[in-house]
Length: 244
Length: 67
Image 1 (cartoon, each protein chain N blue to C red):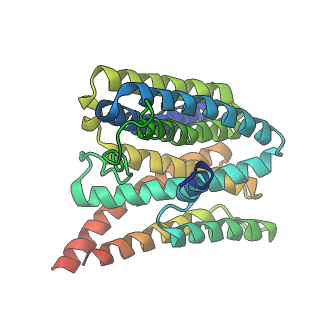
Image 2: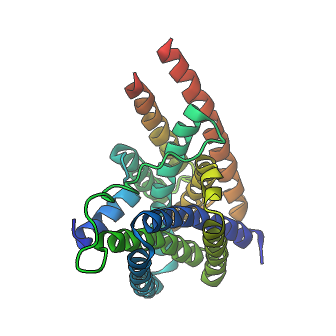
């Protein structure tokens, strides 16, 4: 197993951990407030549909030439990574590296709308389904794309599976621990990694070569790391200058 | 919102989020990489420059909006 694959597995592990934290936060939050049966039923249906979507997505990717696939993966990862990095830089510049994540999603909205209808709480079902399916879709996307790009889809799946099991186990064993994880810092690190891989693969897929071959990944990583820390500092300076 | 609509909203949020301008700058960086590479010029620097511009511009707009 070379350095490139280990680096890929660490990245998949971290991204999956972030998404799994969001997924379990939604499921546990809805389960505690609306009841477990409908929530877990919705989550279960979401998981089954997710399996079908991943299977179809994997078959589709297998038909695409490797360079086109790498360019496509690079573009998707970078668009995703730029968002995470930008948001985490902004939040960290406001509240520091050890702050919890400011969750912007509508995790608990609509929960007071209506009670159980016809025996099953459809609101809890829908929220459980959405939490599992859409957060799971992001995990599946990361596993399939990272795994395909590095020709190690099995190892990417193992890294994601380990991260998922750890997060879910911790979440159900000690729910309060989830709120102690510095979500912004985790997204900051993952954002840097996503930007690094996205940049590297997209450039390779589009016919550009990197100085030093695979070592180019480390150069990109260094660039984005310096840029991210520098941006936190710059945004703090800019904010204090604007507020006088 | 039905699930088909939710699916498309998911992909829009996934790719563009709340900053479509930043995403467009990154996409222009990819296009630039392709054309520079096709012209036989070293092109690995184009995307990092696009990311630098995209995030820096977005952060500047966010901080300016706070006031």
